[in-house]
Image (cartoon, rainbow, N blue to C red):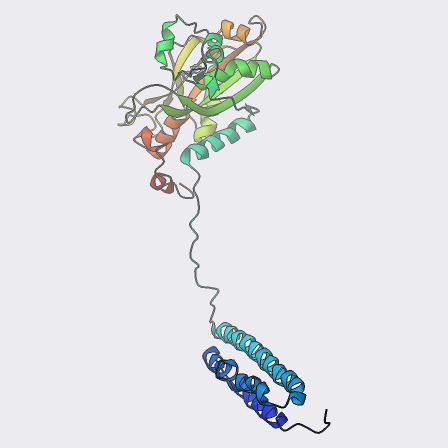
Length: 350
Ligand code: PHE
């Protein structure tokens, strides 16, 4: 092989210089693409050089092949590097041009909402916890025993008709009231104790603005020695004042429930008019809020407690009802209706 520079080297060098200069001069991706086609395309200058191998003398083909192949690679690399540089320059220019005013108000992201039922439930849990109550959670699918028998409501008892029941094929049922947790709590906790158990309850009944087959209750249960109606009344007054954050007058009317003796319907002074009478309290100054009473001895026995030693009071707060009163919701079916617009109405501090 000759040590002299071969004749074709000048062509290679000239094509290299021209291509690299064109690449360096390209200011945008479209121009660079044109340069790429002009050099490496089917009819490109670099391609034309590679095709020339066949015309050369056999002794030169090897060296020429290496030189033209090297040129192709060099041009390819230069184009790739230039493409990266142009892209980076575009991003840099956009960033430099971006006038960002951090004092402009942002776009508020669409957030979720706490359902009013959850909000009131959490609030009550806090009030009760601060007063020494345990918060318990019991099954929604219950045994007939816990929902009825243990609560002094045997199968023949007409009180069963007060709460129309969803029965399951297994013989279990969907609990008709949170009172189903009373006997469970007595077995779970050592007396004396105080506990609440909030949750969903189910009734097999047709729905209208004030009736829903699924709604929420919050059961309260206190077991101690020497519990009397006086304690019940006093506890209810304290609890309700804490819940409504102001002095609440309460009054008891007799009410019948087989699992309490005596049993009461508890009214509170109307929170809307404060007493003189308005349409909410039907001009009586009182609103019916919750049934309650002293735990029946049979229920204490079912819970493994000796009624001569232990007594207690219980109440069943209608959580759905309280939410409706608090927020002026006129149709109970809105609460669990699943229409997102309803929940959105309770944005933030509502
Ligand atoms: N469980 C009863 C109901 O749902 C309410 C209640 C609870 C009554 C506790 C007295 C004591 O109707």
